[in-house]
Structures are given as structure tokens and as C-alpha cells.
Length: 129
Image (cartoon, rainbow, N blue to C red):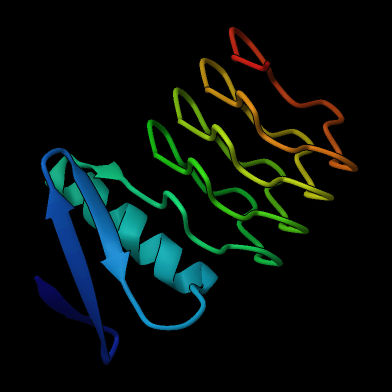
């Protein structure tokens, strides 16, 4: 399914309750914002599993229930973001800014957080193994 937004053609892939963005090349903050907006509109869950999101500024974004398993978030700014009940297992969060980020009920199992800034992060019932 394709949709024209701001002159850009965005292609979405729906699989059951998940929606993902089909794009060649690196995702931008605007791409992710449009995907989240489309998911909310359709009452679906964002699927960014296995995507390369390194070095992106994703601060203050809401990834509630999203699937970011096996994604690369190295050096990304995720400060003040919300990952309520999200699946971030096996993700690479090396050197990411996770300050003030809400990971309540999220699954961070087997994620690499070496060098990540977790100051003031909310980890209520977060799975970390």
C-alpha cells in the first residue's frame, strides 16, 4: 500500500496487526514519524524489527507496543522517548542516549547497551537479561 505524504510516496506493508515502512536506503526521523502516525490511524503496531536506525534523533517519539527487535540503534538519541510495552530484544543500543526514556513493560532482553546513557530512564517492569 502506498500513500503520498508531503510529496513523498511512502509504501507501507501490513502484516496482521503490524505495519512497516518499505524503503530503500536509510530511514529518517520523518519516515519514522509518518510510520507511527499511520500506525495510530489504523490502530496497528509499528514494526521496525531488524532495521538500521543508527545515528538518528528519535528523541521524544512514542514507540508504544512497537517491535524494534534486532534493530540497530547505535549512537541514536532516544532521550525522552516512550517504549511502553515495546519489544526491543536483541537490539544494539551501544552509546545511545536513553536518558529520561520510558521503557515501562518493555522487553530489552539480550540487547547491547554498552556505553548507553540510562540516566533517569524509567525501567518499571522492564525485562532486562
